[in-house]
Length: 363
Image 1: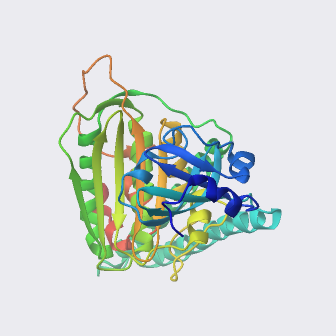
Image 2: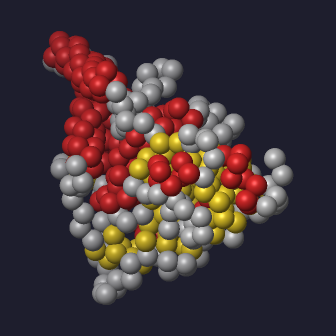
């Protein structure tokens, strides 16, 4: 298709399309078919940035697929750019049918059952050997118990967070945070655990002022969920790059990998939380991590964009720049403790080997 044609010529082509079709040029919506108005309330003539994440139109995307929220509704997006014109095809991400909801609930129950069975078997072995074994095997059994305990704790946290997000009741408490220091500190803490998984983890931040008001605990949970998801779905020897930048009145937190990528159906299921998917070895978990990350981003006043096509998966979290009234910061080092649990070991419990949960980690 010649994208440089008169926009009026696009009308007859997409007038009867059931999908929303939108044309964008220079941040202006130059074309919107009838379905765009009916499904998402999009009309030609307005600015694109209030409706779509600005990074869609930064010139880096020739073709892309993503799942995002448009006018408060989850949508699957396909994008094509030519001659400075972006043609977007939007399809509502449908609500799960009752049987799919039941399957998701059963998968959660199975996750509990598998972990509880592992806990019982390891505990029985630990009791038998703890008094007589001098080889250190008891410590290995204890490490398995610790990891499974953390997996169950993560499952409980995720179910609670997902329920709060679904009913719009996720607690949020804003305070002054140095976003660069918080993200850098967390990534460095995770790096020592990524080596056993066989994935290279790095962090880059463009120079700038990153003081803002946000909820640091929610931000931590958001980033840990993104890292846990990508560590679970990327094979060994992949590279995971975390980036932080500032653009006008927003911060952009990026997570990029060079793994095999995801299909459109997997993207829709991951962000909606309605169709959890597992890795081939079944260690991914209950499938709520990206749904929770997206919900937290929106609760903090931002958005989450995830795209994947061919090779690699790319996630962009935008957060508003809230100028703090008071720049006093508490410089205490974060120990990543939440409710008596180490949050890093909790959120990564689905991907880390049990050897990393030996008792010396908790001293």
